[in-house]
Amino acid sequence: MTRTLAMEWAKYGIQVNAVAPGYFKPTRPPPVCRREEGGMDAFAHSLRARGSSDDLAGVAVFLASPASDYMTGQAIVVDGVGWRIRN
Image (cartoon, rainbow, N blue to C red):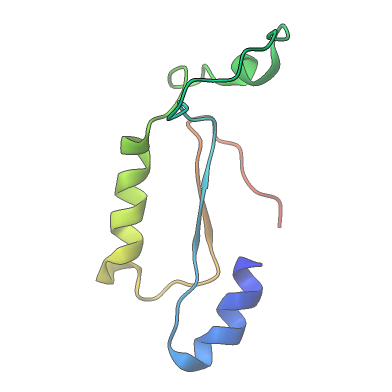
């Protein structure tokens, strides 16, 4: 979707990029449920347990700045693990 919109809106001078966050700390308490062994927590220990909104700030500032003027149609993965979106 990001690439399609980037191609369609480029003629209007509009850039389209996406931020793809990984597993982040919830902003509200999680629902009461039984945790399965492993699951999301199993891979969330590469850099630290979970990201926070502060971890996304640098990417957001970059995309809002002139430094990103020559990029469009990209998804920037911020997951602390090194996973990537398949094209």
